Length: 144
Image (cartoon, rainbow, N blue to C red):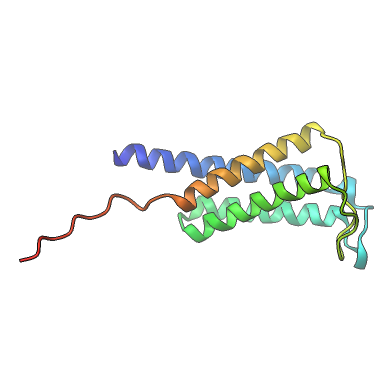
C-alpha cells in the first residue's frame, strides 16, 4: 500500500513539474514577441512573460526538491494564477490594469492552448499534493 501511495505522489509531483515546465517554456519562448506591448511605467508584456516563466521554473525546481505543502500550494497558485490570466485575457478585455499592458487576445494558438492545458494539469496535481493525507493515522495506545 505504501509503495502505490508513494508512486502516486511521485506521479503527481512529476505532472506538476511538467506542467510548470511547459508554462515556463511557452512564456519565455513567446516573450520577445510581446516586448513592444507596453503598460504604464514601461512594463511590457514580454517582461511579464519572462517573469511568469522564471517563477514557473523556480516553482518546478522547488516541487522537485521538496514535498512541503507550502511549496505545493505555491505551485498551485503559480499554475492557477497563470491559467486564470490566460482565460481572463482570452474571454475578457479588461484593457490596461494598473501598470500592466492590455493583453487581450481572443484567439487560441497551439502554444496558448498547450500552456493553458499544462497550467490546468499543474494546478490540479499541485492541489492534489496540497490536499493529500500524510499517511495512515497511528493507532492510539490502549489506556491502562
